[in-house]
Amino acid sequence: MNVIFMEPGFPANQRQFVRALASVGANVIGIGDRPYDSFDDELKSWLGSYQKIGSITDEGALEWAVRQAQEKIWVDRLEAVVEAHVMPAAHVRERCGIPGTSARTAYLCRDKVAMKEVLRKAGVPTAASAGVAGAAEAREFAQAVGYPVIIKPRDGAGASGTYRANDARELDAAIRASGLDDGAPAAIEEFVEGHEGFYDTLTINGEVEHDFISHYYPNVLEAMRARWISPQIVSTNRMDSPGYDELKALGRQVTELLGIGNSATHMEWFFGPRGLRFSEIGCRPPGVGQWDSYCAGNEFDLYREWAMAVCHARSEQPPSRRYACGIIALRPDRDGRISGYDGVEEYLRKHEDCVVGHHFPDPGTPTQGVEAGYMANAWVRVRHPDFDALRAILNEIGEHVHVRAH
Image (cartoon, rainbow, N blue to C red; front, side):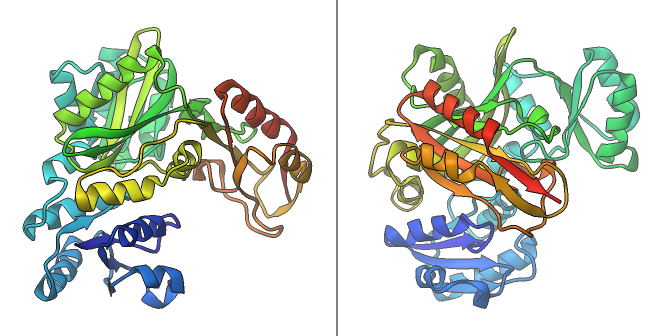
C-alpha cells in the first residue's frame, strides 16, 4: 500500500506515525516543507520518498506534489494528523480521487460553529454558540445568552486564542484580544461550568475500535493562565466504570453524525451542574504527546494500531487497561532562561518504577510562556495501576519539583 503522509518531520511525534506506517508494510511518501537533509537516518529509513514544497498548508502546492506521486505510483491514502493539515488534506484528497476523510467531515470537525449547529440539531447536548463577524454581534449574543461567554477562533485547536468574559468590560477586552474588532471571524459561546476532559478514539469504518478517556486538572483555561499551576492530564484505566457510559455513547453519536470513517478523533467534554456537555471534536489525534500516555498505560503501540486502521481497516492488538497514565507540566518560576531544578533526582528516584517519560531542558535554555502548553518546558509522565494513587504521585511531583529561571 502506498500512503502519502503530510509533514513527517515536525512536530517531533510525527515520526511515530511514519514508523508505524512502515511497520505494517506501507510505502510511505512524505510531503512537507522541511528539507529532507534535516531528517535523521532513522526517519529517512522509514520513508520510501519525500517531496519538499513551500508550505504544507498551501493546497495548490500540496495537490501538485500529490499528482506528481500519482504519475509514478498508485496512491492508496493521503494522511494528515495535525489539526492545521486536516482541511487541506481533505480538499486535495477529493480532487485527486483518494479515499479517506471527506471535506465535509473535515470542515465540520474544524469549524466550531458549523460543528455545533449540526450536533445541536441532532440533540447532542452542547453550549449555545454562534459565529460572529464583529463586536456588535458578540455583544448581542452575550446579552441574549448571559455571562460568562467564551470567544475563540472558529478553526482553533485547544485553548489557543480562547478568552473568557465574565461581564461587558471583559467582553470588550476579549473582542480586542481576539482580533474581532479588526475583522477576524470568531466563535462565541456560553461558558459551560464543570469538570473538563476528553474522549479520544480510533475508528475503523465508522465504528469505535479503541477509546480512551482523559481528565484535565484543572480545566484548560485556568491551566493556561496561571504560572504557579502545574497542570495535569490523566488518562483513566477505569474505562468500564458505569459513570463513563453516557460519555462513550455521546462520542459514538458524534462520530456517526460527522461521518468519521478510518481516523483518530479527539473530543472535548464538560460535566457539571447541567450534566454532560459536548465541547468540540477534531478528526485527528490529541496533542501534548497524549498517545504516548495511552501506549504506556495500555502496553501497546497505538501508532501501529492507527497504521493498521489506515492501511488494512482492522485492529491488531487490544489495550491492556492495566495502568492509568498522566503527565504533569512543570513551569519555570519566571520568564528568562532555565538556571536549574530542585527535587528532580529525589522525586524521580522515589517514583522510578512509575515514571515512563520526562523532559527537563538544559540550563541556559530559554523558557516558554505559560500559554505555550503542557510540554513547552519541563514535564514528567507517570503511570500506576490505581488512578487515585497516580494523582497523588503527580501532585507530589508538582509540589516538590521546581524549575528555576533567571
